[in-house]
Length: 203
Length: 203
Image (tube, rainbow over the protein chains, first blue to last red):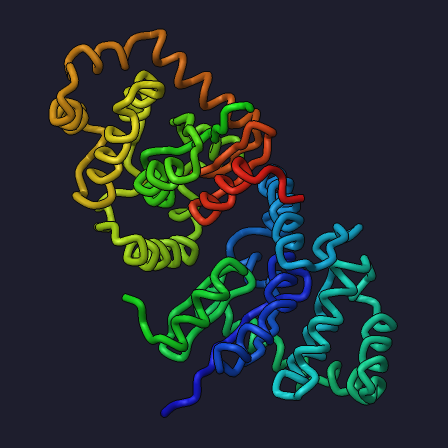
């Protein structure tokens, strides 16, 4: 019996990634699926599609709708939501810490704390002090982790992971990829992706 | 007690509109909701956003994903699906007939037949012979309806409805608008939109 896993591609600046980061661990646990956390940067992926900003900013009707849809979904999931005073925020530092800790037991809690800072508490997650405070609150060695996160090797690891996202055909976040290569895009598809892993291909 | 209604904005060329056109009548009947059929043209709406083609063609990774996602959803709903040999097809004539018949008892059956021609049978719905055959099969006066559909007054009605879509902030199809003005975008939100009408605002 092979292990049941799901690759979870997310970006800390992404509004719908917020919903999935907050929801994924209990759902995966109930399904018996191990999550591979795959933080990446949407910016370079968007640039390759010709967008120099979030499509929610480039296309105002899409953006207006997104914030309303997000509010409805947050209410359904009973998640707090404050529209960030700046969108999208720069998730680079948070992503560097997350790729460093992707296989550590604290990755879920760290990711939820960063997402809550951005989308519930309207904090600037690009500010190293915000990330430092989160790590400290989790009982982690913040100074060491921030130094390691900004090492050349770790910067390169995030760059390579972001390139990999483009090679896989990702164009948004969150995205989920099953061990047999099936891609699901969007918070709406989280449950479908888990079911695919558990039950096997539906088609 | 006010009547429960839902405005259903759709476009015959739109892949996710296919799913909702095929699904909406039984779901609405079960929910006790009357559907207001609102055919419109996505082309002018897309143009206003700077797209001179379907975004699924402009952004190939989005397009590749969409066809796979559509296949998964069609399998779930037990709907036939053949990738159209041309996408998007020109849904102008079909939309003109649909706006003419929007309040007629045959609007649902006509819309499903056109969608099936496009997405199940790979027929060219821009061909008047295809639309004529559909109307005839439904026992309707095809010659008269096609003449009325292409009258100046009816052409203008579709143009005005498409302008209205832009004014409402629509940016894609299918979209659903409740009597209290709540917008839901995408086949994924059909059930949510009906629930909003039946149960009242969720937030």
